[in-house]
Image 1 (cartoon, rainbow, N blue to C red):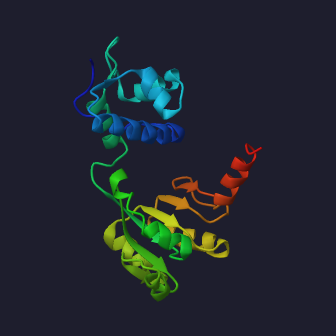
Image 2: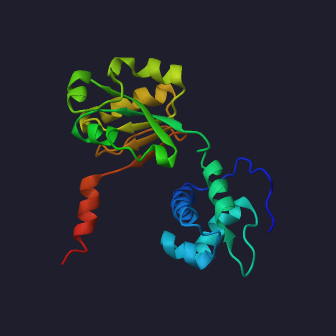
Length: 212
């Protein structure tokens, strides 16, 4: 099996990055179950992609796996983890600690995936705290200072739609490079900033098509 000892910064398309996250989750489950090797067919089926697509995605790391034996689960899992930049917990802030934002703040699954929500910001911090949020909730006027002092690059946006663009403008100006947007609006950001939109109503609309 050929593999470099250290994987440098790899230029990987955005869609492939999303699939790598899925592969990593599947590989982690295999590792937890004591599986040492996995075939491309088995891993592709678990991830919901074609084997040819999986092999193309993994080719960004060089030659992995041995013909007839498959991919080494532990090595491939750690390689993807490092490439995704999750050797250490990445700090994340949340803006808009209303009902949805507070629910996300009470979710404890982020750290397992390599992320730590370190603080929340809201126009009414006391109301957020009354919803059972235990993380620090600061007034939104502290946003820029906190981002600069803690070198945060990722943000979750849960503000009402009418405030979303103004808030994301502040986030970008403060140095945020990635935004997970729960506000049902297409945000305008510079090309260097990545926005992933989560439109719950749109997802339900998509699901309803398949309900008969």
